[in-house]
Amino acid sequence: MSDVQSRRSFLHRAIAAGVLLPAGGLLAQEDARKKRREARRNRPVKQDAPSERLNLGIIGVAGRGGENLHEVSSQNIVVLCDVDRSRLAEAKKVHPQAHAYTDFRRLLDHTELDAIVVSTPDHMHAIPAYRALKLGLHVYCEKPLAHTVAEVRALRKAAAESRCATQMGTQIHAGENYRRVVEIVKSGQLGEIRRVHVWMGGRPIPGKRVAEGTPPEHVDYDLWLGPAPYRPYHPSHFHYNWRYWFDFGGGILADFGCHFMDLPHWALDLRAPASVEATGVKDYEGDNDVPGKQQVEYRYPARGDLPPVHLTWYSGGLRPKGAEKFGKDSAVLFEGEKGRLVADYGSRKFYFDDGRAEPAAPPKTIADSVGHHREWIEAIRSGGRTTCNFDYSGALAESVLLGNVALRAGKKLEWDMEGGRVTNCAEAAQYVDKEYRKGWGL
Image (cartoon, rainbow, N blue to C red; front, side, top):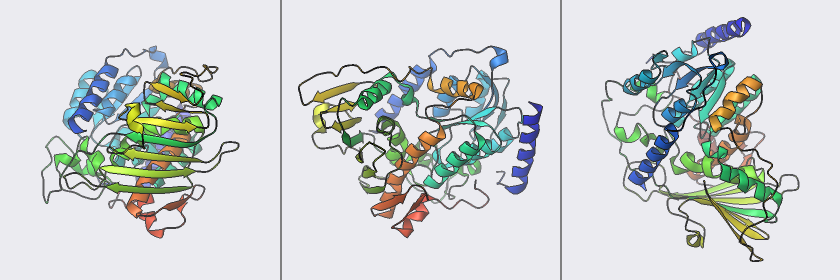
């Protein structure tokens, strides 16, 4: 342990010396999220013996971060970090023994840490996660893993080099229904699958840009902005609402794509698309730059004996033709040679050409989950791999984010997965990566 701490101390000093950063359907959709959060927080958390507990640092302690904090509360919470001091104070009440900071860099100064949990807005995922991996810390990071494709690829590389246990926060991956659907698809009962439709009914929350604004006194707004372009404070791009601006998030696609596209990626062994084409329209009031309706055409190449797959993403009320008969606001539709399967987080229904209502249950090849967070904790201890490690989830997040790259570039893109670049549209490079505010970067 002393050798590990010495190495981390050296890396902390090296990073500090080499990279200096500045010191300083709408309501219903959110109501549904809040209810799910409360239900998850009320679940008991398996407690470990004190000698087994990991030392964790938590970056982002409310909203999604509060749920993640609750799920890992069986461990030793050493450090809490949030740019909002009021949220930080509430978390400190539950974990009074923990150090508390607004600046994540002070959290990373703690050489006794084993791992961190990152639950910040998308634009601040990559920087703390990347630095933690370089320090040899295990990382749990919320979806869509990072803000840009380039950041996702940097995290994948850092994770592979560090051999740390990683997990992206696509919690539904641990759900029983997803696992059974994957087994059925892989069993071949639907026949060859070349077509998939994924739709999500959410809509952006309208916001506005302002010429000037004053952040609350309890918020370190400069730290919240981090690498993003400076914008005067306004609540409509702050807590939760940041999702609906390309400076900080990526709209409905970035918010939900990793949850719903996870199912076909897992069941069909998809990695990166060969081409991506997107259309979108901003059909709502507000100064936001993300679309209200969006459709993305992903074309994945053949994988071994598996055929090419054409996957279409729809959001904002768009759906595949005939989807109304399924009665799903959000779902995944697999179209196979022998029948179709419609699934969402908790249900599945089959439409077989031979009239069968249900397929024969295939052998159970995917074990029931011990819990998405618990899986990560156990992987840290055992040296094993999680199901949403940064290699698997990075390919998923890369695909999702390429949908927004294609939308903003306004052209069908040919994607070179090995080189990590668009081969037919030079102007798309500015959306594959991004320009960081002065003083910030990986």
